[in-house]
Image 1: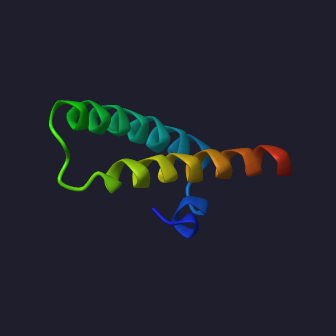
Image 2: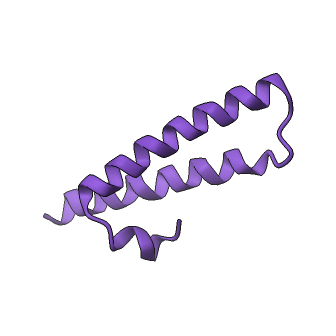
Length: 64
């Protein structure tokens, strides 16, 4: 998800999506430990998406 798309969401939606991405990350890591993923860069991308969500929430907190 791009930063532009994240800025259009409200705080509750961002938090919900961030929680979903965290769950997705846990599942990816578990699956990768059992048998290697076809594309292990998925883990990196999910981590970055979570960071984008967290950054946007923090920016909104600071600017209020």
